Length: 243
Image 1 (cartoon, rainbow, N blue to C red):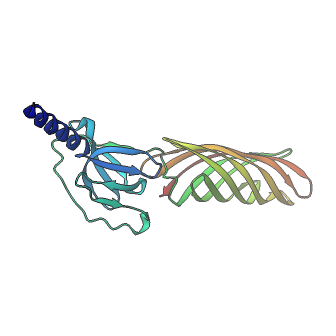
Image 2 (image 1 turned 180 degrees about the vertical axis):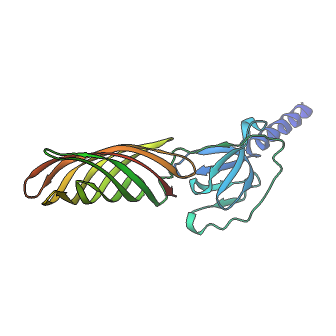
């Protein structure tokens, strides 16, 4: 009887140890991952799932991690991503071949972004039609996106447009919808018109992991100057976003 009690205690202790002998990664969105942490750098964390240690190594940005509780009870917190200074550590990869990159979206919504792109397209009005292009400067963070467009063409000699958009993130980019205000000057033979424009901005942006993106959309609305003019401007652009 006494021997049975001893064996029962040993197995119970071993079971408790096996459950606790793992690292716990706590993400900023509240999710927790049972893992075996392999490597921590200043930008990312590599780990294996504790329930599949023979599986692939998973890589996540360190900005997504709130804290790590190691199997020895020590806890490491990453409260402020801008001030994290983590020493480079390395543990054997144990023969894995291809890392698996895990991101929720193509652009990290927690980081401020800045983008530069060149755009081209045409324009259609009530009595005018033309084409042109220009440069776009983009600013944003989270679901907010703002753009400043400066371009020219024919018959629109100068075009300035600022847009303010809501951005829905996805794994391959995101859909945006918003409004814009601007000014353009139109020259047609001896006629010169100055117009204030207001309208709707809509489109989809395909973003690669390197930051290069392809954008397709349109701005449509009205312009008021010497007369009223309907505005429809298709937007096809190619650029790069710094994240």
